[in-house]
Image (cartoon, rainbow, N blue to C red; front, side, top):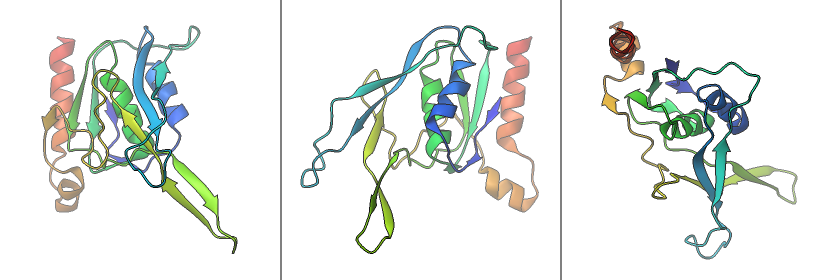
Length: 171
């Protein structure tokens, strides 16, 4: 079980290394393209496949995986989730939609020394070019909102669902 529900992002490269430990076969995780025309938001670079390549001398787990997601799953938390969707051994996503914020940031320095960044990439599914920007990656099994459940002191319904599912698959 991977709990990605409160994940502010980080390194896509590290996320892909995690995915590499969860497969024994290479596959395309997602396809990236960058916006390349400031006057036409519909123009992009040629899509580039991003591959998951299992490392021969590393531990690999190929059994069932449940991934817990929520509205606080951002950036690299989402790219790992998206990469695992393509995993040859199926995963189950449980929780709520992720945030829908994928892009690496194109940084620029202004004349006064300030730095700003703009998201300029799209992460697409390799099969049909679908993007999860804005709407986020939906779960396979939708359950209660983790943050609200914890605030109310109630049980963690996503964790309970994932644990039950993993137990059923182990039997």
